[in-house]
Length: 177
Image (cartoon, rainbow, N blue to C red; front, side):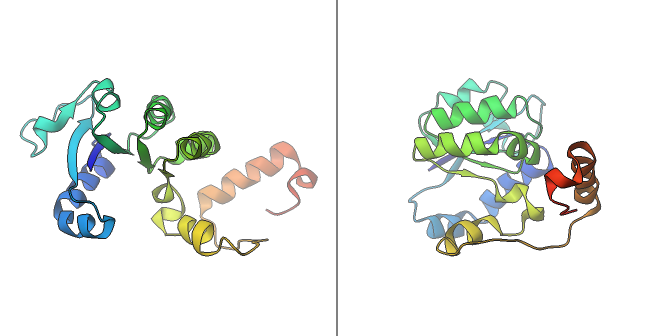
């Protein structure tokens, strides 16, 4: 199975490193016969990088490569990440992202497109500091009716939630914050 990474910053280069370091284990767990990182999209130059031959600055090199089945999006921000992820899903490629803004703004739409195309749009790395929470809720607890989730929120979340309450009013939010 061929994989592409979009964005080669700290997260993207870390994904490439994990794919290389844990290659055999990932192949065994995924029950794939092969696993190969074939393209990395980034506008910057990385001379001397061990993956130098995989770099492209043209998104179409990933989009039009039918052998690429999984795209890992680590670019961050909403644009052009949204347009690239949407195009990948429409082209039959599953997507994994760590992009909080993308998931918050366009997650529902992208999940719907993925479902319509029988693909995966996975975003667990973008929520809860990467704590595995999405899969247990959506798969392991699928038969349960979840009425409430409780947890400790960080300062940023509390600040944002208070902004919502101040904007909408406590009655509309339900006084939850």
